[in-house]
Amino acid sequence: MRKSTYGTVAALILCSASVFASQNTQQEFNQAYQAYQHAVESNNYTDKYELAKKAYLLGQKVYGKGQQNTLNLASNYAESMPDDRKKEQVALYREIVIATEKLYNTQSPQLIDPLLSLAKSLVESGKRSAWHTHIEHALKIAKYSEDIVLESKVNFEAAKILFTSREHYRKAKQYLKRTDEINITHLPVDSLHRLEVDMWVAAYEAGRKRHNAAIARLTNVVDVFDNNLDFEHPYELFAHSRLVVAYERTGDREAATKHCIAIAHMRPWNDNMEQTPLYRQEPKYPMRAAKMGREGSVQLEFTVTPSGFVEDIMILNPEQGKAFQNASIKALKQWRYAPKFVDGVAVPATSSVQLDFRLRR
Image (cartoon, rainbow, N blue to C red; front, side):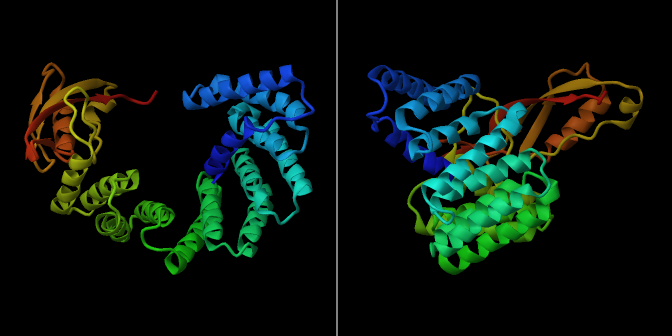
């Protein structure tokens, strides 16, 4: 939710000039804000923080304290703060909430983003229950707005905030369940929001080792894209990749093959890059080597079959001990890959990997 809000703000800010700011201040602000946007686009987190702060301080002079553009700049500044400034971040989000209530009212939809941001910051700060009031306030606003999609999205944001903490896992599950109930009742099957929630529900089911339930959800996502949507989307790729994992964990390797091949069509093989497995098992550390404090690395070359299985494994550094070699081969045989396609046909392809055996110190 916040991303879409800030995306709108970015378009508004620079075309809003204030009669109260001098021309020099306005120009300095424009430069600072443009530099901030560039830092965001280039993932330069250090500059992003400093420039967000500068834009916020200048923005107060350009737009005036307590105005919506200034509050948007304050949100950008708060969001950019590093982890060691959580106390300062919480305080600024509180100021934004109070100012937004004053600018609108205590039940304005404009409050939802600031309330959720404050709740998120409190959870990340380790505050045990302070977040609850703010999430419930946001949910109340969404519910009484009679916008069912908004209510679903706020529940979903609440779930995502709380899933980051084991302490709040049960409450997060409740918010996710409510989101899912709203979506099933009110949203079309091809709603991207509903599909995203389906994947979160699938991840929750997989985490509880309910792999068949996860498979059902993920299959639904794939079917929706196949039957209702005529474009590729990261959700579809993600669903296929998680289906490979789910089927492998249930022992149905052949069912996983369909999704290995689907991913290969969506993400072509690149000979210049090391291939990333869709499913992998970590090798078991040889007990004798562990007791002796021995470490090692095994380099392997292998063939990825047209069905995405691993065959013809060859050790490239045979000087490594047999125990490490055998453990590596046993694990690698369970891995799955997206096969290589040439002229529309899946073909065998060679890849390689290094498996490291390191003891915790």
